[in-house]
Length: 358
Image 1 (cartoon, rainbow, N blue to C red):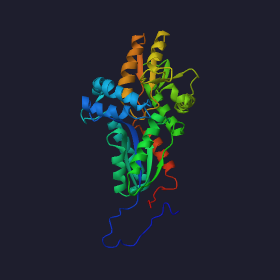
Image 2 (cartoon, one colour):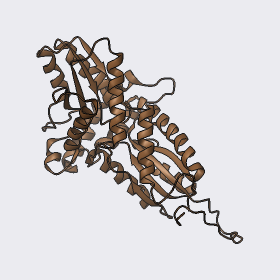
Image 3 (cartoon, helix red, strand yellow):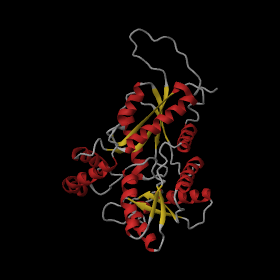
Image 4 (tube, rainbow, N blue to C red):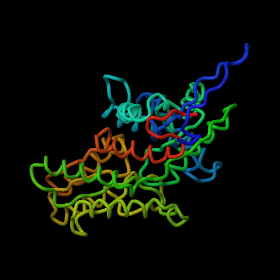
């Protein structure tokens, strides 16, 4: 066993020495974020943090902030709050994204504890809102994490998702007096177990449908086309995700369409737009479609309200008759297997199954 995974025994600490907890490895999964509630002020705080992120909206601050603070944040918290209210987990008083991310983390904790024992601490954070990246990183350091593996739960890389999540993690590290060694997990859109989990979710949905959908639409979160032209690989990774899914399913080349949703602002975004494309499918005589969301690791406002609400309505209003929404991978067994495998691959050199951290 090498020195990275062997147990190091030290002599007793001298009197007056500050407490030194046993060395452990932190595994921190991160998702986009959620408001604390759907009331106006909770929504305003959340939207202000999200829409002030230069990775999300990169207009000059002098131009963007007056519009954001005086126009958008005066109105949008009401409409967004109503959307969140329609999907809110009232029993736990939280958004579905928070509920599902916690379930994912609980299952990963159980899986990784069986693999590594108490050498690991598994937790989650949100890029926007709570629990914040900084608060969870601080807690991990206090609990003895001398190494942290940071895992943004976005299969495809985009500056507005993975990069900004990493930015926040690095900012949190900057505030640590005893800074842990850190790694970040790369985009995993072509990992075989992720593709397998996606394929199984499609096969399960099709088996449960009353009739076989005539078309599968893979709807990804959108971004301005300008970002693609500046070198963001997101569009290409989405296209490859769809191709790998189709190949695993063994379907024809025209069986799955790639589209993009959540368009915001006046400039052109990646096309085709999901809401327009599903309406066009209905006008072409396609009566039954299924929609999956390969870019989302957990169901959230963009899937539960936008896809299963607005986009469903656009298809039915244009003449469609059946709309099958395929849930995100969430805490499905195949998804947890994929995520835990990716984590173990990224722990190489730090931990081996059954080993202790140093």
